[in-house]
Structure formats: structure tokens, C-alpha cells
Length: 90
Image 1 (cartoon, one colour):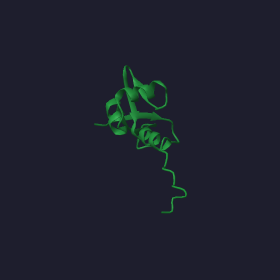
Image 2 (cartoon, helix red, strand yellow; image 1 turned 45 degrees about the vertical axis):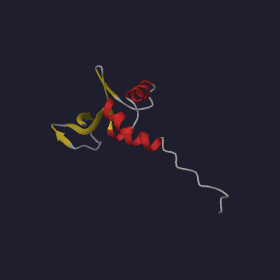
Image 3 (cartoon, helix red, strand yellow; image 1 turned 90 degrees about the horizontal axis):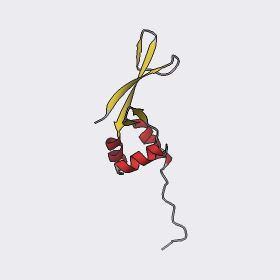
Image 4 (cartoon, one colour; image 1 turned 90 degrees about the vertical axis):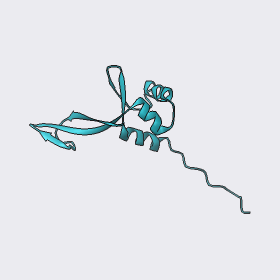
């Protein structure tokens, strides 16, 4: 289950909510188990990537969250397409 986090951002940036001069943007966040399930890896692997700073994250106290869009970016960054076969004209 994802949760939404509202972050304060400075004026001039895209926003979903504008209240009293303070702009807020809704961000969908995932827990470590949700991130692991999405990427089909273990929670230990996600924690390792967070510790190595390979995966952007937000730490609130002892809890760690990953933005859903960062998961998508991580997949795109680490995607390697298959090679085309050469010289196999059977």
C-alpha cells in the first residue's frame, strides 16, 4: 500500500495544492517492503541500495521511504536491452 507525502516547495515549481503562499506537492512514497516487491528483489537488497545511495530515499526517523517515480527512474537507468543476434541466418 502506497502512501502520499506532501512536501513544501518554493514558488515557481509545479504544484498540486496552493495554500497561503506555501505550495505543496503530493508525492507517492513506498516502504522498503513495497519497493522490494515492485522490483522483485529482497528487502535486504533494497536496504543495501539505500545504504550505497544507489536508490534515492527519504528517511524519517528509523523509517525509510522511496518515491514511486524514483523506482521507475531506477528501472529505466538500469535497463539493458537484449543484443541483436549477428550472423545467424538459418
